[in-house]
Length: 238
Image 1: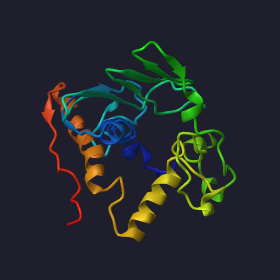
Image 2: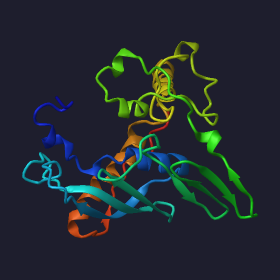
Image 3: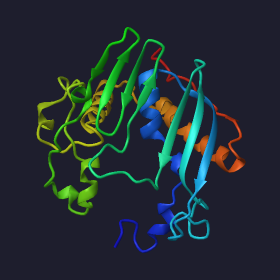
Image 4: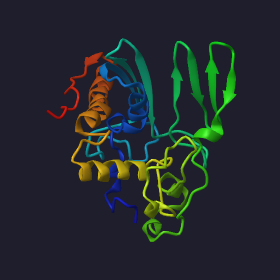
């Protein structure tokens, strides 16, 4: 039985653009800005297998793939692709990023990450960002997970990760999402213990998610450019 039960097709058609955090979080978290408008294009599914089908979908959604172009508060732009029907090879990252800056470019493909500089320097930094071998594959929590999906939930850390602050109790425990889980848990627990806001707080989370909701509204309207409301920065302690 699929994880969603007998009626799994009703929920499997969740609108791709409404799950934007892997794409937007990776860009906005590094950039330090937020999206203020969006124009999106949705691709209606043609497979006819009863998944992305408006007559079956509890969301009334038949977009399986979608792309969105966002305007950012500092006058820049970013594009995201949320594809659910795509010929992705096994064993390669599901999420990848390319940043085009005025002084340099970080370019990530399925198998390599390259840093460019205006000076002409070109460096392969794949080993710096690659999280390494998966650990904890035998954990009981993965018993019901398809083996092809295990790497999405259990992975190591990359050299670029600052793990010096992590408690020793985490050593050997399962990690996931390219090595981020341990860091996120530590952020949350230390924030609660120190009575402070974590780095990914409710205001930051809104900036990572609300743009996707608005993007999904733009797609069925032919890519109409829509404004994205903003709830501002997190309050500072006074």
